[in-house]
Length: 188
Image 1 (cartoon, rainbow, N blue to C red):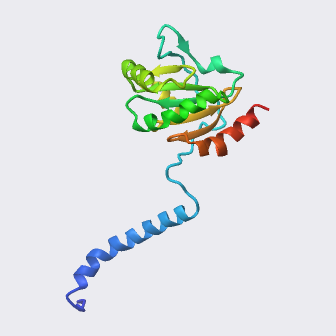
Image 2 (image 1 turned 180 degrees about the vertical axis):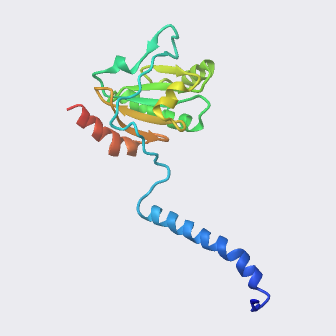
């Protein structure tokens, strides 16, 4: 049996019909996710509600001293992952400086995949908002925390449990609407 051609556009229709249908299905799926409030910038962390991974790193400013989350048991604190090479970290830095002067919440740094000299130079230039920074030049601790990029910030409670993770720059809105209400609750 031979198919009868209906015109010169049959080959064109067959060549593009399947990719067009696939494209429309994918576009429809993405549109429905965005309409339902899905934010592709938010990466859920499997560590929320679990103990923060322990580590012992040399301090950035004084490599003879060590920094470990165990040292902070009994405090609610922020762990901010940053690097001198990170443009977003430099943009976030003035806000961290304001936050550190406020004194509401201690900020500890995790200098990630960096050179010590570059990190110290950045802090000398822009100011140091951190109580101290652990130096993680090979990124091993960042891997344990599931860091996908800098900056990232973790809120850790008095028992050493991660209660919140922010991917990207902290802003006044995030602090007021998400982090500070949690801090008040955790400090009760």
